[in-house]
Amino acid sequence: MSHHRNLLCAGPISIGALAVLLVAVVLAAILTGKYPVTLGDILAVVVSKATGSPSGVAPNVETVIWNVRLPRVGAGILVGASLAAAGAVYQGLFRNPLVSPDILGVSAGASFGAVTGIFLSLSVLAIQGLAFVGGLAAVALVYAIGSVVRERDPILVLVLAGVAIGALLGACVSLLKVLADPYNQLPAITFWLLGSLASINRADLLSILPAVIVALVPMASLRWRMNLMTLDDEEARALGVETRWIRIVIVAAATLMTAAAVSVSGIVGWIGLLVPHVARMFVGPDFSRLLPTSMLIGAAYMVGVDTLARSIAAIEVPLGILTAAIGAPFFLYLLLTTGRGWQ
Image 1 (spheres, one colour):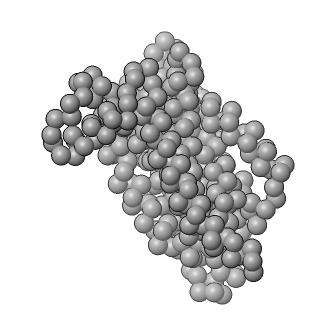
Image 2: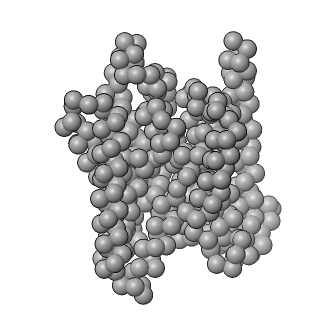
């Protein structure tokens, strides 16, 4: 009972502390770069854009803050929060701590869509659109297969279908890489598959923000039912939860959120797998606290890693490399030092 009371107290405190941490990481990210800016510059530019008055800041400094660093930091917040939220949803829904947002093939579908766009030399907007549609289509195909196979455990069928479709789409991506122009298309394909926020602009943020908000609504409104979805289907139905429809709605929301994120960032691994584990250590498994905590940690982690990616070397390090290099050892550390994160 005391442990439960401690978690209830720890939830709001942890969420508040993580919100402060996110603000600190965001400010550090905006200040960090080869072109120096100050906190006063940031405040002046933001106030100027909000009020329409002159900022008094040098035009080149204003451009760096408003057109380069703020959109990139905003994308880091959106992408990190989205992948972490989707990971928390999938892990609870599939009752498995090893599940990540790409378990149903959304990342493979997005990869195939984007690589197809690059292979056809389409515009950046078209590549992002194909990545978004490809991710949604892959999960729709997995769910269609799952609806046909009714005799077996629906969760197991979805996971196995996701693995199969993901492998098939991965083979298609490999084929396109073999056929691509090795001087122009292949480097662009490789760079996209490794993940980056280097070319983000405000239009990209505005293009994915509606999808993220729409996906977040059912996640938040069904948060209490998500706690019951961690039980066996029979137990959940006995408590009045329509498991089949809730699973469809939640999977659709998590897929929409993930597809929107990876359509602008490329494939960024480990966030959806690692962050929910860390969040459960802070606030426990209750989804009403786990969701906002995961989103805050995911946003801060993504912004921090992106800042590291553009500042540790003369050339920018792809995000997928850094998230794996940081995430894998930390995940092993969690695995070896605690067994309480999932229970």
